[in-house]
Length: 561
Image 1 (cartoon, one colour):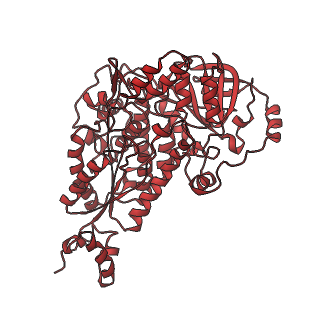
Image 2 (cartoon, helix red, strand yellow):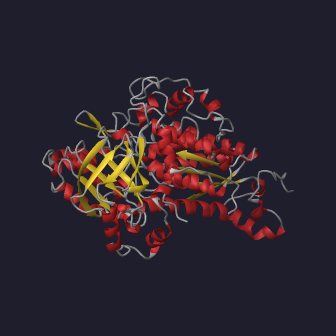
Image 3 (tube, helix red, strand yellow):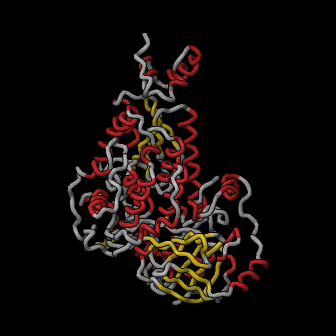
């Protein structure tokens, strides 16, 4: 006997599991364990980004198996598959770092390919490291099937000589050691304890920024983004995800029903209020692009002007994500914003309820240390600013949450590539007042727009964070703080003005006016542009070559089109 048909739930998978002509497909499905009754259940893809290459993802098999168990319990059939991850923290400062942003596109493409190719009815992605999360959301937006994101959680802080430390401290320690301000013994001692176990980087770096943004988008379980990786609550939530997805299938609530313009504004405000990573600009623009939502880089600055900065999280503050969790997590921030009329409470979420309905069940209040009341914020405006001017006509990004250095004018010292800049800093070639210009590291020029934490960490470790300005067409780790301007667009590789800067040129930045200017006449810049020619592409084949040919401006999210 054929089981009762749940035609409304098998919107896609019926193509592979029904009818006499699908007997060969069913033979394959039986080989992986399906029974007669399973053929008429909805098929759910589980993207599992487990990997031994990084502590962010090393534990995800455990959580993904709980999700799988929960899907079975929800009268659905789970199909787990894997995809890649690149550890920014391990590849930082090497050529391999160029692959990091590229991996976002590979992750999105691979999740889309499996879910589409195997006619899945729904999608759950279990992920943790930086590019996992936007890649997952980009795929969900493309596929537009009922979808839920499940975050693997953050690492706990390490401890050295009585002080909590994390990976941010390691990069800054290298800068201190290079200047003789730290012993090799202390550097190696910190190394052994900075990352005490599984989980994504501890502070409000890119992983936790994106986890918080996804919760604000309504695409993950309310209250889940601050739970530490080692906490057993993650396994409990994993079991619940299957039932939640089944509810989405029953009500035909698809990803783009949740990923609306209002939802993106909510996510941007949460990032701004929490002092989140500059990478959130790239990633939210990219997700919005895939969802068909018209979000522009200027929207980050518009919303930042009236979104108070209300957390004290590293890298610009004192605390880490596990501290957030102890006092109620991201819902505390969102309730503060909601109470001030700064969030859209009527948006739909993966619970099937509105954001306002979800938040009504969270009653924790700001503690005044980790999270400030919106009535007395750390700063009256948000943690990011978008700068423009003749150096960045399409825009550049500064994390104002991570610096008090908001105005600068000084001579340029120009370096074509990250390694040369890093050596200049560690060799003592960069002095107080300088503007370090690091170029040809943009989406096309890198290619891959690698992060510059090795350089920025060295600057901060040398005590130059209040006197040296860095600007680049590359990007920064979420652990970066100080006066560091990234995503300068157009990039050098396509002839953007940053390509025309020469040693000694005067560059000025004014955050209040949002101006980033090269004090060189328009006529002189035109002359330099006529004499300029792009350097040869660093990669012409393979994934890096494909990416360089297809990628757009950082001001558009560095999406491949």
